[in-house]
Image 1 (cartoon, one colour):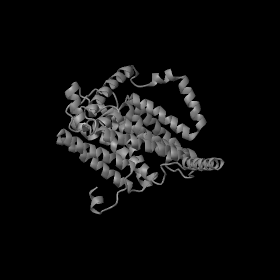
Image 2 (cartoon, helix red, strand yellow):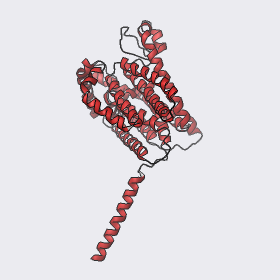
Image 3 (cartoon, one colour):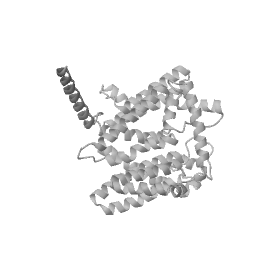
Image 4 (tube, helix red, strand yellow):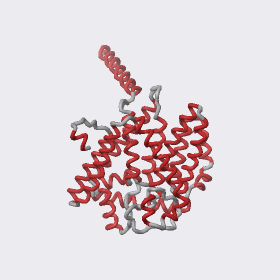
Length: 381
């Protein structure tokens, strides 16, 4: 950001920058309004996110996307490799800090933890990164299916199996549901009829699928707990509706009011509204609407080359889907991947009109018809 401002470069206002800028302004307002200047730490974090976003927007899409894909895929394999020795590492605090199985500064570590921690000190954060890696790899699988590169495909299928097993080991119920959605999208991009057949089979065998869900015995208990957290988070938002209370303030306020150690709202939309107020929350909804529209517009367009569409189609929904029952963007580890992906996607679709050509042609035709009919009516009168 400093280099951009120093050199006087023009910064184009894009949906992603609009969102980050709105969140940044919310933290400034929240710090001043609540007279808690520790909130400026979140302002600094968001400023660094904006710098990363601007930097990625100036990079080559092909090179950036390729780098982030393979770093995330290999990172997922590293998570998977940690699991057999996870308990051994967690007996030593400093080894846990080094490998990522514990957050640096954490004083108490659960040595008998059964779920896969990975290198993000939390299974719910690990599952998000594993899902990103899986979606990127499935995008590569689609390329090899189309090009009939079956040797590469065979190796990739083995790695897919490892990442799927790693997702199960995290014990995340949300991760299990998102896994089904990603594979359905993958098969849909491969063959629509196969996807329709798969969806029919899943509907018929829904009870069997639920039996495969990790920690299914805690499904209703977890849902009730989430419901309580959401209701309390909405109450916090109502108390600080304009600028929110930032992630720092959320933890403090929740602890003070409800005497429970909850770090975030466990829902992305509610979390953004609570932490960044209506200013940040409305900006988020606007940006989500724009990108959903752009995704559908690109999918329906007649452009011959859609080289990276599969990668984006499989990975971008993870940001939203993981945000339904959790708020993984709370962690910079996950947020960095999401910001790079978002910046790359926005550069990839920079020339895409927000109004689809088919809609434009329909509107023009409708206007012409109205004009003609109106003219005839005047002549008749």
